[in-house]
Length: 380
Image (cartoon, rainbow, N blue to C red):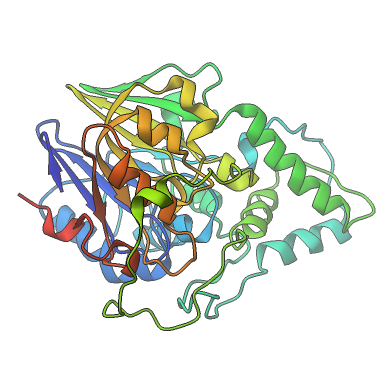
């Protein structure tokens, strides 16, 4: 879709996220997440090659958090792109990503005990090449080939806007890229530390002695532990069909239902969430983080909102929809998981939102049949 000289592309990423934002007059491009490996091979890679053929590049790539439906496509991109100085696919100026090394966990100047090292290697290699529960044929996670390791060994500029520190709200001012301003809303350093502490506690339950040092194995094992972690959603077992009979929804009654309990999953809470300001336009990309975690920092008018966690009712409240003037809500999901998106959230957008908000979707799923527009149909 195009909006005020901003081109936004929402790739078909199954149950994941993959967004491309181009500020046309600024000649500036942002890639946020990469969906699954399938997303990369079928959609993102051909698109990036076409960009490269036009002598364009990615100015900023943001990996919101460690979850397979956001990170696996990026991992394949980094594998195939090779060295950042002489890329095979496209130049990427900078990458924003928070790994294990961005926690404040104290590192020791000791060797890793033999048994602990074996456990770390096992964690790093725990998800082999197979069909995952979504039926999506995806990539293996191999030790020494984590996103963190790929960024380092291929010389990417990693969090250079903040001098290599964590991308978080603690002490981080707005980042200016010419006329484009990016304000980080989430995570806090405390959440990143909690995520690391939670993982170390799990590691300690497997080892008699745990030594934490600067070995890259910790990055690999940390990602390997979280990359396949699932929420408590239910996968729709039947083959998705966009020609099913669509039930009649009483949207007004649905809109009155109570909010769900806020998502507290640490991986989601660690999402890099950003506000982008450009001229008089504001865009919100929260990853999978619940908006309530940073609602006090939000303006009352936001032009474009990417609904967090694929429109889950655990990640956005009725209050936000009812009090925020939004022009467009973006929903990235194929509807494979129950509650993605939440009928209550959709009902509130349709009946209670400020400013007659419109829904832009990347799949014509049954819940949204006849509602909103497909992203592919919105180009001017």
